[in-house]
Image 1 (cartoon, helix red, strand yellow):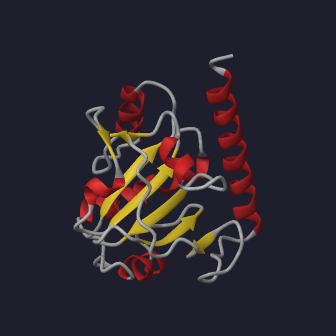
Image 2: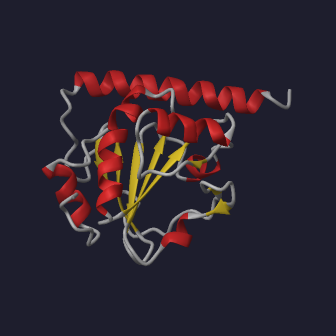
Length: 190
């Protein structure tokens, strides 16, 4: 029974990812208007909230939390290797991370060995994103029960939430640049 919870959690996350992908396809990739309800797009319900205190593993396997990265805008992206929309947006997240305009923490929800996440990124030629991992889903769980993959949360330089984006996004697009500018992040990946 001690393995039941992680298996059930992984199953539910997979179902949410698949449901999210179906909803995205039916929405013709149109993002929800700011403040609008809906499965994909920008959600501002948490605006001004501090980041959760939940910890996750950095690329060296050490325990960190979002607050450790304050001082510059931070985009936290929750993803998994088995989530097709997550993998689809990785190259554009990588380009954003290369630009240095915003700190990008792509936090994998995979429960396998930490080295497998790093190998996955390397195998997909993702070079700027580092292998952060939340194998026990402590971070995603603390962000709310309705968190689906992928979800990205932007925190300003003071560590306050600006918005959440549910679903995949081209992080090099004008839409992403406009959203990122809300936290003072330079809008032009380069």
